[in-house]
Image (cartoon, rainbow, N blue to C red):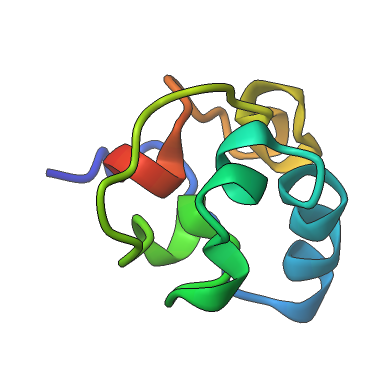
Length: 81
């Protein structure tokens, strides 16, 4: 259930550009070739990746500008969201 007081990450080109700076360097993203599976990024807005057999091996989400801007919690959005 979404918290109506918490901002939802918007799927905008500006947010996608910010996301690319972090996801491209993330261990999970590289190890599991997440660019080859939908969604290819902005997992905090679009949900987890459809990549099979993913493990949590590293996470850059907390370092991302969007994480702070949208008061996100946790991380590993590509695996858990």
